[in-house]
Structure formats: structure tokens, C-alpha cells
Length: 166
Image 1 (spheres, one colour):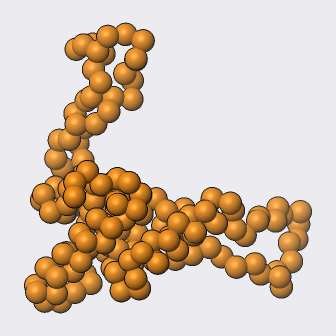
Image 2 (tube, one colour):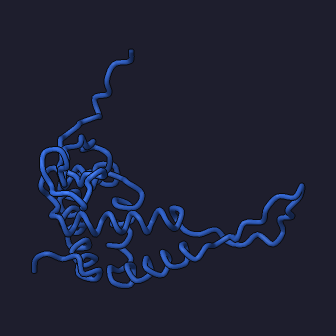
């Protein structure tokens, strides 16, 4: 059996019970929420949330941004390659789906709201999963970037009406 990874750090969290039946009263045999183990180091966002650096609205905005980023397939949707020929009865895939187009439009709204520099930071941390220590060398730069990231996530939460405070 291999040695456990030192990077894995589990923490119990309360999540919605997928087996909860709304047809019956919630009690010990039918709980609404159950305890699950979460890897705190799964991403920079979960690490910052576990340390109390991000609030619930900022985490929700980061999660939504990540979902949009992943819907786009990472950096962006692929362009049509007219030079490629489909052979052997292979199915031609539409190069850009409607889901990717909608995600791209929403990410364009995010970029217009945040600006180029802050959008780059949010996409690197929330979309690509980089930690601030991987992006920046000095502690002062990381602290400033964390402040900027929180401000950007606050703006996104307000745009998507996820903000819980003002």
C-alpha cells in the first residue's frame, strides 16, 4: 500500500443529502444534510475558503466562474478547421456547441466587468486552478493578489446576484 500523500488534507463538511426524501419528515433516518469529507487542497479556492479568506458569495462566484471556464473547454472553443477531411465514416462534430457559446458570452461579460488584469488573475486561480504561490514570488505580491481576487469575486457575485453582504 503506497504512503498517503502529504498534500491530501481532508476536512469534514456538511453537504445536502442526495438520498433525502422530501415526501417524509426529516429525522435521523432521513436527514437533509450529511457529513462528507472534502479535500481542502483540491483547488486554491477551497483552500482559501477553508482558511476563512473567502466568504460564501465569493466561493459561489468562483465556482460559477470555474463551471463557465470548464464549459468553454479551458482557454476557449476550438475554431473550425476547413482543411480537415472526415474519413472512414467518422462523425463530424460541431466545433462549437451552444453551451460553449453561452459560456463564452458570460465570460466576455466577466472580462468586461473585471478588466484585463483582474480577469487574468481570476481565470488563472478559479479557472485554471493555479495557487497564488505558483503565480507570484513575493509574499507582498501574493497578499495584494489575494485582495484583488476577493474584489474580483465580489464584483462577479454582485453581477450574478450571489452577494450576501454589502
